[in-house]
Length: 335
Image 1 (cartoon, rainbow, N blue to C red):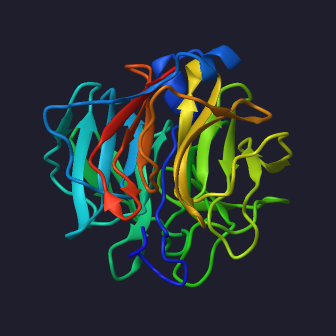
Image 2: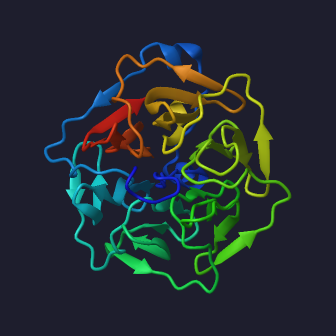
């Protein structure tokens, strides 16, 4: 989204779902095959009774506590949003919460398998980068602001994901308005603990991330940074490892990515590039990237939100920005 911040004008994030979520709903991964990836695969434009208003850079993740995809905030032409909505596979419903984080775009959100809550961090509110942490309690339909003693800088575009080892929420990177980060943090349920790693990706924000069901590791691709960021890394809960795939997607940022167990990997769609917004679909299947050829696809876009819905077995994509035009569309991809 070009209006969020400078010197790099688009600093928003997207979110991922990881191991604890898959385990919570009992989804068994299936191996990816060329015929699945290139044959009957298609993106389907949904027609729910009432879609969320146009928006880019909302936070979104599946919440096993309610069995639904949860969407929060984002940015529209009128400003920044603070609404909470759920997707049940057929329709979007607004959630009347007793409290909510202040309006923002570019926040990170992931499911915490230890506390059983969604964790939201940071973002941008139109004038400042944010560094607050919130937890969504599905039972009470309330957002609860956390008071950690330690934590990351106030950042936009940080990548949050469920830790592959123990289900905690981990976070990497972000942008504070001046500098990119390459710090890795872990949410303990009450505090942020910075993890010391011997190697890590170059500092960046707005990367594509998702859990690889074949290896049980989080994959991270590209993003925005001061140094070269068109690379692929994996995170096993203890260390970052650079990968050398035979085939790699073109460099991008603000792409939408999440696990699709039936395809045996992480699916990534679209994003922004120096040549414009993208509309391609890629699969990371443990060691390499494969470009998929769905029969139909969303128009090229950046800053869409995506989350895998185990209840329907579909990847859900909503909103985004396509060459400056905001979208309210909901698309699904079934393996």
